[in-house]
Image (cartoon, rainbow, N blue to C red; front, side):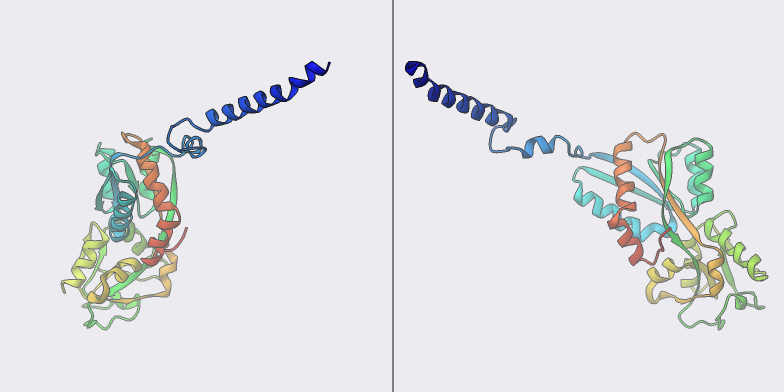
Length: 272
């Protein structure tokens, strides 16, 4: 019995050594000091790469340009190409087979066109809201101070076409207030309306609050209480034909996440 007991410490030592070696092996899937971080890394999001094209409403130009730039900087090897226009034009282009990976609309109506046509992958996510504001040249030559003033004789007012979200919003406000406008032109995007005002071709234009803010001292903004009758909600989604849905989803996550919310809020957008 005494002889058997002499071997117990040796057996215990051998067991401890074996356990230690097993622990080292489990902690070293890679060689040089990666330790447990390696196993954690296996569950991390794979590195993003490739390119996508984002079709976005014209009113998103400044915000999406910044978001895309920031996204590329954080994800080397990715490329975000941006195409801005009126939401209705973009929806039509996508319906006709344009190579878009992501669609961001200035209203739910144009997004619904693509959803109904089964051209959208998954459910769209609402990420911002916007309301109309009157933009006038800095000198305000027509002395505009209210929405009703836009209907005064001789006032050259420019609006978006009815099929464009900003145009549909203008029509909603007209009906809500009983005001009938006689625009000198109807544009295909809100940026075109703003261009008419900044060039002096119009006395006033109906654009978004965000467009006035982005224009700086090029225009003067006139807010009106009736604008809350037509709040536009902005949805974003992956186009079903996208060849890089992983990158598309990642960009959408950036837009709808905390960083996107901050950029959009700073630009004057509201939250849905």
